Length: 220
Image (cartoon, rainbow, N blue to C red; front, side):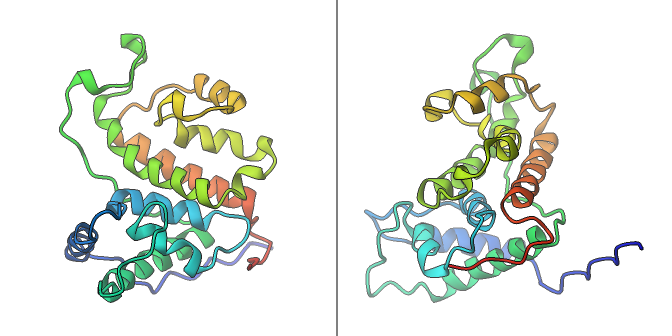
């Protein structure tokens, strides 16, 4: 019997104006706090949403306005900032739960060839692919503070993790020999659009590994 189609999402994605406003609000977070930028935030939220157990909002939300999770000053008004973040979290949550395509917040960079990943000339990814680095760094930040995903069976997560973590420096992947070996087998993405497609594919594969579609969400 064919599987019935999943219902379409009724959520309204953030507009370009919302996105600009969110970045301005993040930029307004006072020092010494170190907020994520919008691209890192997007990767971070995906890293939170693919955990085997649902991560409570009060655990992940502080990392948006400080990567280490330090609290905001009492007088800082974060109502609008948090509202926009919750909307993006809900949008990504819906897409990942339905295993549907989503548009990662990736922004093209103006770079020259010197910024391309180190390696033989014919093995370098196009330099514009470096635009995905902040997104992946945000995803990795989520794994640092919420490591349950990384404790799953390596056979289920190594391949999709390699698609993401190949955009990080090898020195950032200490004690990850199996992951580094998998990364070595990958061809560089042909262009930025391919790299972005791989981010989405890897995220959905990790969701499959952490919370298979037939399993209900777990909470903690």
